[in-house]
Image (cartoon, rainbow, N blue to C red; front, side, top):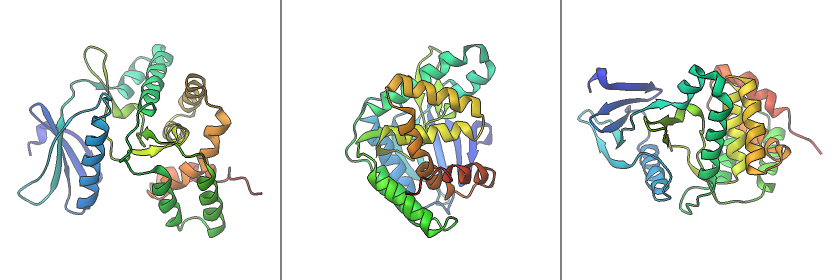
Length: 250
């Protein structure tokens, strides 16, 4: 691997450019099943026609690391553009929300169900007590069942804007099918972890453009926070635990 072509370094993975492709190389500790599931998710979502990088293959390096190879998209992240051009922030946010609503308009029946994934995460979450876990799992179970495509990590750093202004959605490792408001709650929390004003702008715009009541998205917040708490990211712990307090006991 040529480090000059490095695009990003994340926990357990390096992402680098190789000609017209991007290689996401996972370290030896990353489960093979997770690599194959991510590639399968992306291949399945690709079939919906959404603007995403196409998968070219899954391979193993000489040192035994698994890799996913996909299209390289030339451009800049929407996050960078929003930071550099705050005067047009509302326009960018409107484009961002419209793109997320387009994702939610698609169906992909073979994706895993969000409810199943989150129920397992909350059941295994030992940093909150059994009473709270029970309440969260009961609320999750009672939420309406939908089958919309959900990105699971939809935020401006995962959107590439090309030279012609086209938008491309990256990182489908968390893709599932389920309720659009759960995906919106996740995006709201991702914004809130960095900038509460942006989070509030997003929430208002998403609810207006999708014609979904804000209260409905907010009912997902404790469940969403609990599902993310299992990542054990220290700087997120305080805010996520605050959202758990939103649980309504009856």
